[in-house]
Length: 194
Length: 195
Image 1: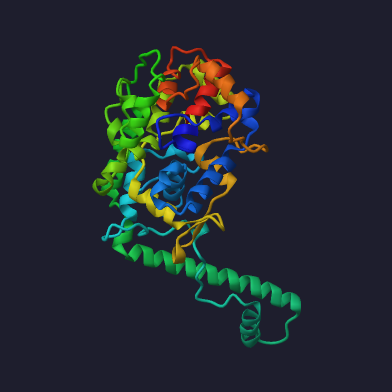
Image 2: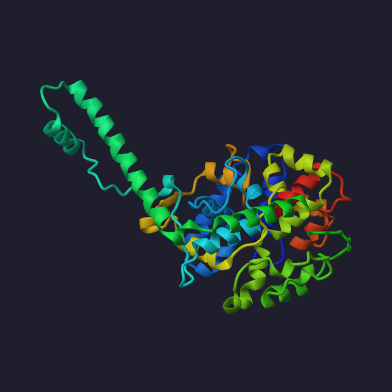
């Protein structure tokens, strides 16, 4: 608790962490994850941004690099994230995420965290109007539901394909060129073996 | 590579006055006589010249300390930690923080919605599941008690063999986590207080 969860600014241990370790059998049943979040909230509410190091920054940093969308590294999907990410991997991804002015945010977030920007209307009424206008002949409500699902699905596929095309056509967002990528992975693996 | 041998210096914690001076000067001299990892003083990545004075504070919040303790542990000691469901921390590889990135992330954190808000880029929610997935710590049902308690303080100071009422230094506890110490419930206590 003194060095990672809620790092001390002084060299002495805070006695406030003692009650949590009295019953050693209960330690595994405590909500340490909640504790880490509470400290982050408390630090953010303190409004003193200079004191960010009082919260568990290891968590925020690894969470961030793990949430970026890049094909520069092959990051295993399973496993505790702090055991997967090495200093070198973090540095590599953060360099790719750094803009020319030194600010962060060059890489897109993983799709699940992105705000969905759609070229098409998401309003069911609009979609139904579109279908009704183009379907020839009679159609039941069930037909309409089927068409609606298919149309939404096709819009998504089209948008994903378009996004992929844009990503590939933008050289800057390609990350490392294949040769560099291979070298990086090789170096990284050798380091692990050592 | 981290090669860390523990040397035990008795009574290190009995220098409260010196420690307060250290705190004011932001000099972690408590680590002076502990053999440091080769890049210990650089466990903050990237340029940080502007914030040179805060470098030692960055170092104090650096995961480097926990990584070097875990690397030196014996198998028996590891089992004690794993049994408390803290096994994920034993394999922690990230040991360096990037100060600029940390500042950026704290700036994006919205405490009301509890998420990292990157505007048009999107939002990353901060949840218990996410902390468990990233840090490998337990997300059990009971809240972690974090407050002053006279009885607890007496018991823990007794465990450390401290009789003058002064709190131990983090560096002192690090030494007590060395591979020569028995894998007992006290070892787990020290580890949790330390990490």
